Image (cartoon, rainbow, N blue to C red):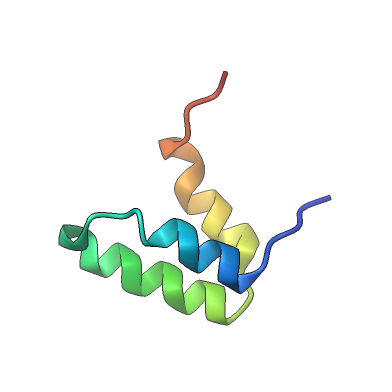
Length: 50
């Protein structure tokens, strides 16, 4: 089961470089709309799988 909340997502997004303004704005909007599945779809390719 996938669990997430807006505050946790916002904390993680603070680690994104400010040069990625479009990405930050897009992820912020998705978080505010509770679209966590879409957020995961976007960031999954960037995650390192152990």
